[in-house]
Image (tube, rainbow, N blue to C red):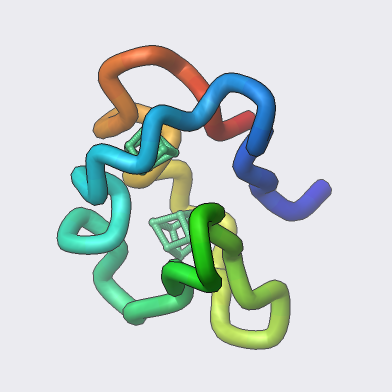
Length: 55
Ligand code: SF4
Ligand code: SF4
């Protein structure tokens, strides 16, 4: 399963963007998305999100 950001939970703090080693997380308008083609499923972003919006 690929990691996904729950846009209903995310508060757009940006912490996950800088945590991703392959720059797979991008801001699109008011939401953050993970590019499945770049994501290696390492889980670092999920661990870095202060409100557990990534699973
Ligand atoms: S799981 Fe790893 S590679 Fe995928 S978006 Fe999160 S930090 Fe980046
Ligand atoms: S770290 Fe969590 S709350 Fe912050 S932008 Fe990423 S998904 Fe949203």
